[in-house]
Each structure stands twice: as structure tokens, then as C-alpha cells.
Image (cartoon, rainbow, N blue to C red; front, side, top):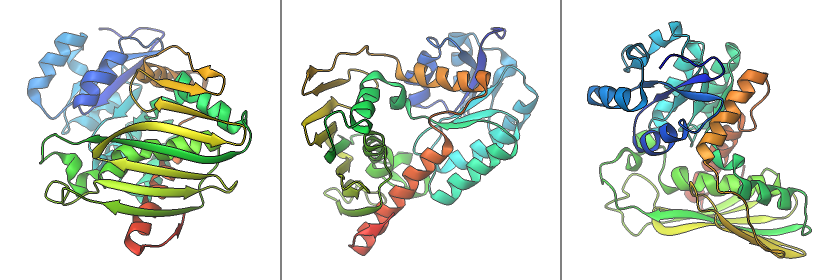
Length: 334
């Protein structure tokens, strides 16, 4: 497909399940960007994707020739959808190729990597965002409004939990510390950290955390379940759970004048919530399409993204503090 005049071209780097089943279909629904290219290390995927999405051969790359993307005007945005340990390298290389960049969450293995990614994009004046799709989703936006505007008074307590029972490949990259950085906390817990941050509009200052492991043979390198308490300057405390061994998916808020919640809080669709006024009733949208369209609009209008690299870095900063608390057995400053 030749480049449409009014849309920005996106290249997906890494064609795993998230790119295959979520991002590529979402790019069929976007209004301001489209799937222009791919980067894959699996030659057999090239023809499948080219045929399915009508991709030009010149817009198909592998990890060896990736840097030649610098001379391709069809590609405006590079979306890095790789194992966490590879985010840093490919964000920096994408910026070096003069492209705007989206990195999937969690942003990187550690804060230092995050800093280098942000610096690389700033140095070449390219926009950089993290794939926090929920910030564009109506139910989540309502939770942000209710919390930050204190519609039901001062926030007292947040209960945020996200997890699933891991039944996948025991050799998957997500179970290797060097590639994933951690387990349930990095993968699922980041949503809870985000939830507590966007409901309060504050940054936590202390954390106390503990880890629970019932399947050490499966989770020998990474965490299985972590319980963490985040303390905010206003006095609100968020009790978080991240897990690879429990089905959890909620964001519940206790405020002075009533409680509000999302009983389905972090899914790709099927969001559910209620307030003292009754059940929430908002459109169910394609979250990834909304996220990518917003980023394209930020580039077109030259405005700042609401999900910048700094936001992703703060989540990793909090993650590091949680791991410190587990190691020390004490309350840690963030």
C-alpha cells in the first residue's frame, strides 16, 4: 500500500502475540496512522504479514538491516514490541533513525535504561511515548476524573490488583529475569501502579512490599505474587497485588463520601465500573487504536503526549523501590 497523504506510517518491531492480535488489528481502525511496515527476525512471517496487510516489500525489515529504516519516508513511528530487555536498544536505534517512538510497557529493565531512552529521543527532537492504552479509555478516564477532582471527597484507600494464572511455556522470555526484568510485578503490577497514580494524581513516596511464591520450580527467576502498599502525600494508601498465580483485575477506591470502582479495570475491552450514582456506562473502544491515534496527533500538531517516557520511568522507579522493600523487609522511600 502506498502511503496515504493524511496518515503517519507505523512500523511494528517484534511480531509476537500483542502485535499480531492487538496492535495490527487496531491499526486497521486508526484514523491518523496506519500499519506501514514490520521488523521481524522470523523470515516466514514476512510473507504472511505482507499478504494480510498489503505491505510493500521495501517496508519489511529484519534485525540486521533495521537501521536502514532511516532512509524510508513511509515510516514515521516505530513501535517497539519486544521483550523488555530489548526496549532500550531499539528505542535508541529508532531515535537514531530519526523516527518517533512508542515503547510497550514496562518501559525497561531499570531506571538507568529509561533515562538513556528519553535522552536519545530528546537529542534528535523525536517524540517518545509508552503504550499506556488505558489512559485513553473512557472508564479509566472517569476514574481519573472522580479521583483527581475529589468528586466523592478525599481519597482514603485504593485496592488495585492485576494478575492471571500463568499456564504458558515454562521457557518463555517472561520467566527469564534477564529478559523480563521481573515477573508478575513488571508485567501485571505496572497497571496497578498506574491505576493508583492516575486516580490520585499524586506520586507515592513510600512503599512496603512482600513476595509470595507457591511454584518456585516455574518462577525460579522471577516473582510470582507481590503484595505492595504505596503511601501517597495526601495520606491515601494503595494496596496492590500483582500475580502470575491469581486471576485479578480491579481498581477500587474508598473516598470520604462514597466508593467507586472498576471491577474490570485493565483488560483490552469489556470494562465495567460503578459509582455511588450507579453503574458506569461508557462506550467500549479499541484502546490501542485510540492510543496510537493520539500519538500520531501529537506528532502532527507538535504537542506533548500524555504518556511520555518520564511516566514510564516513574513506574520503573516505583518497581525498583518495591523490589528493594522485598529485599530489605522494610518500608522504603521511593
